Amino acid sequence: MAVIDDKLIQVVALISISRQTRRTMRKTSEIIWQDTQHQVLFDILDLVGQPDARPDMLQLLRHYTENHFAIEEAYMNELAYPGTEEHIRAHNQFREEMDKMIAENQEQDELFMQIVSRFLTEWLTRHVFGIDKRLEEFILSSKRH
Ligand SMILES: [Fe+2]
Ligand SMILES: [Fe+2]
Image 1 (cartoon, helix red, strand yellow):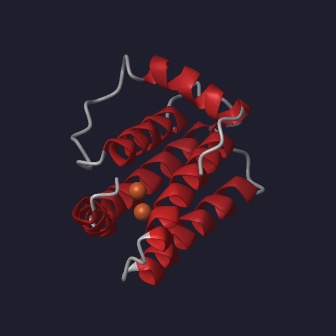
Image 2 (tube, rainbow, N blue to C red):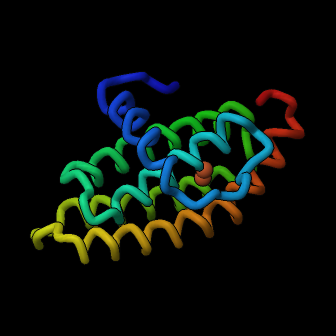
């Protein structure tokens, strides 16, 4: 389960800054923990695309994403969710995309960070309103959220 560590504390501090400027994101889930974590992920992606983005923003994004994916995967395993394999495959694809971007040798300049932010935001939007919705329904019907 989730471990509160130094990096997560940094994320929370940054989010309060981002919330002042960010567009309002529609609700992503009826499950409070899932919606809250998605909102934070979109917040971090917004921060990645800001002109004054911290150099370690991608690492913070990677860290928070891992935390969120691990929680969803723990629920899937615990509830023997039938779509587990497909869902984990989608998470792994996102993990790989992020690892590739973090490992890029090219300079992480403003344009690069904006492209990364847009690309990952689009991917995450599709995921959150697609495959995550099916998981949400299953968790809600299990009454163990
Ligand atoms: Fe999710
Ligand atoms: Fe997911």
